Amino acid sequence: MKLFEIIRLAFRAIRSNLLRATLTLMIIAFGIMALVGILTAIDSAIYSLSDNLSSLGANTFDIDPKGENVRGRRRGRQQKRGEPISYQEALEFKERFNFPAYVSVSFNCTGTAVIKRGNEKTNPNVNIFAVDENYLEGKGFDLTVGRNFTHREALQGGFITLIGSEIVNQLFEGEPTKALDKSIMAGNIKLKVVGVLESKGSSMNQSEDRRILIPLQTGKRYYATQEQDYNLFVAVKDPTQVDNAVSAATGLFRNVRRLRAAQENDFEITKSDSLIGIIKENTLYFRLAAIGIGLITLLGAAIGLMNIMLVSVTERTREIGITKAIGATRQTIMSQFLLEAIVISMLGGITGIFLGVLIGNIVTYLMGGSFLFPWAWVTIAVVTCILVGLISGLYPALKASRLDPIESLRYE
Image (cartoon, rainbow, N blue to C red; front, side, top):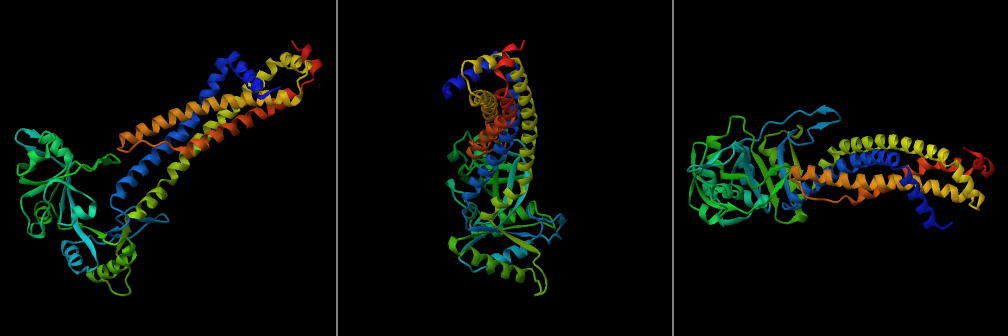
């Protein structure tokens, strides 16, 4: 019997038991949906974050107090936290770091600011950052109109600001030129707009455009606390010299922190090209959980599929006898039942893949990520469905192929 004919018979058998086959198919679909959906959401989020970090290039690194970043725990033990980087330490490092690089000093003033212009105002979710003149260059921001802060303005302060495109949309009808030289209120501080940032979109539900920047000294005056931690960010001009820059920065910052030779570093340096690797490492458990959920569901589906195939063999005993009587071989009977199980499994898999990719990307969209089709996970899902069909259909197919044609014809 030709393969096409065997497949046709398999589909006919599925149609004759449509409700039973559909229920089993949906169990498989939910297992694949859980597997593909969660993994798609994780991969899309990582891809989105990677895409946003790529604008910084592989030539940047941060200096943070020890225990501040995502590697603060090692082997289940909390590391001793380093002291916050003070304003004096940050400026001293910036002045003494003679490597060909941009050094930026900044800190996050607040993430719940309301920006006003006349009777118009934003929601209370605007980020205010206090920055120096190197912040835009280091973080990869460009200006649509206007100018950057000068070195003098950053150190001496001033009531001026750079605003993101989302603020322009809300307060200036989306026209950057209208915002230039206009005044806005950030809390009780009146600021003059001297520049508008180009849009950078959002990542992980954090909008890069819902922000305003103020001079470092102005932020220190109005928002800094006694224990304020200042961010040090270094962008090396030559990407091939990043490792040398990290070594130079480590030695200099130890000197700035007044650490003795025997003391360990109370700070840590994180290169931008290593952040994605760290995030992937920390999402490993989510991936394993998704795979576990999917496999448990698929195990139940495999048991259910084997059960309906055994029932199908019993119900079609007489049909098997007739088929054998007119010349069908054991191999033909076995192939028919195996293909029937694989077809049910694959139909469930295709449904699950569609739902999984859809749900995974919806979650990613809500988190601020971009669409991603996970070819690797889809391939794994297809292979898994084929294996589920083979495993579930093997025993029923063997049972059907071993039936005696004479006894089968007598079966009522």
